[in-house]
Structures are given as C-alpha cells and as structure tokens.
Length: 150
Image 1 (cartoon, rainbow, N blue to C red):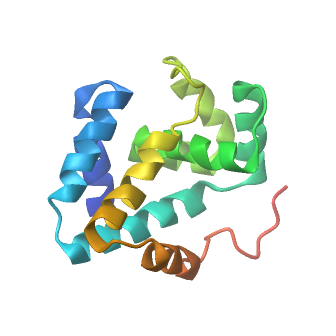
Image 2: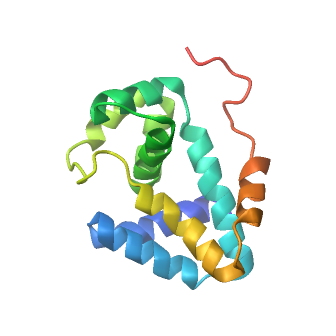
Image 3: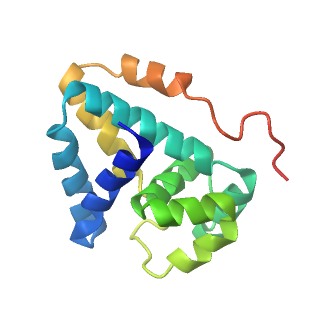
C-alpha cells in the first residue's frame, strides 16, 4: 500500500462527518483488507505519525489541549491523521496551521486515541498478537530523525 492509498482510506473513513462514525468506518474498511494490505496500512499509519512528529507541534498540542503528555501527543497525532492528508501535510510543515482545524472540538480535546487504536485492534483481531505490529513500528524511520527541532 502506498501513502497515496493510505490517505484515500483515511478520506473514505471521513465521509461520515463524525468522529465516532469515522472510527466505525475505518474499522470496517480495515477489516475488509487482505492481510498484506492491513500490514502495509499499519506501516503507513506509523509513517504518518512520524512525519508529523516535532517539538514545535508538541508545543502547539500542549497549548490547545491545556497540557500534553507523551501519550497525549500521540493521541493528538491520531486526531491530526483523522483530519486527512491536507491537514496532516500542512500542519507537519508548519504547526501553526493547526489553528485552521480547531473549529470542531472533540469531547476529549484535540486527541483521538480511539482512531489510532483502530489499526492495532484490527491487526490484533486478525493475527492474535501485537508483537508483529510493534516490530513493524520499530522499523519505520522518522523523516525527522537526526534533524534538530528548533
């Protein structure tokens, strides 16, 4: 699965217009995928998280959520991925772009842990283990690796 296909899946899940509906939709889409596509989706999800990771964005997440732990930041990145490719791309390049996406506050702030949990849950249901998922996650290099965060 290419990153382009990954973002198409995210966009398909967004058609419902609610976070709960998007979570259900993503679950259904992933459950219908082949083993190979599901595995590749998990890899792409981690790459999308890594691509957006920066301390500048973490600071913005801290401000908009009134605090932001390690887990909270990953949940913020899940929210950002759920917003789609355009939001992800813009905010990854300039964290202040997040201000344009704050119009609809989720009940738990700008964190969407449930969305990020979907690929893990579907993977676990399919293969009965998390080990391979975590092994995949550890093999993905961050595009920001080795760069200074200013």
